[in-house]
Image (tube, rainbow, N blue to C red; front, side, top):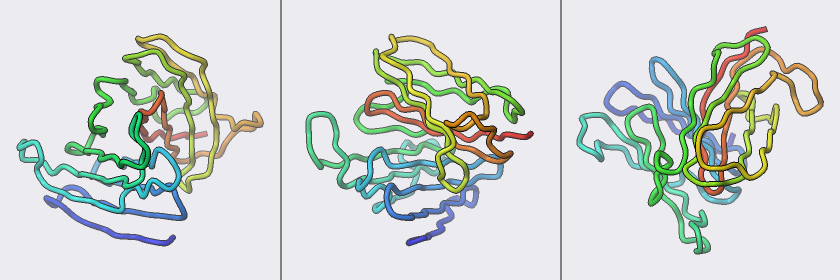
Length: 190
């Protein structure tokens, strides 16, 4: 672990930044959940700049995360900023994922054998679902070919890429469609 910082804002949310090489990972912990944000690409310097405050005047702390060397569409190393509104969504500027796609919480959760992950695309795109354990080790990767705009789902059988059952524990699933991605937590209980 190269860097760990813990910040507390409004007394409700604990923020931890943990970097072990790149990409950076940011863990936001609340009383009810843990959200994990992972850089889109290696060497983005995701999380090197952070600001907290009530950015949208809703009396809830928001988090602004910078990625200095991220590549917005059509520009190289121009940088990106990500807004974390409150404690349950992540928005990329200037194209919010709410307008691009929606990733739902898997169900059932916790699960014992398989789980379904639903998402909705605002545009046609190839989709990649990755599943990592709490240590950031890849458990599974599912790639879908070009998918049309609209609702879709992926079922994960709780097995790794070699067809072996993975251990019980906390896993993070990340859906990526084009330049947009979102990560959520799920629990496997065998």
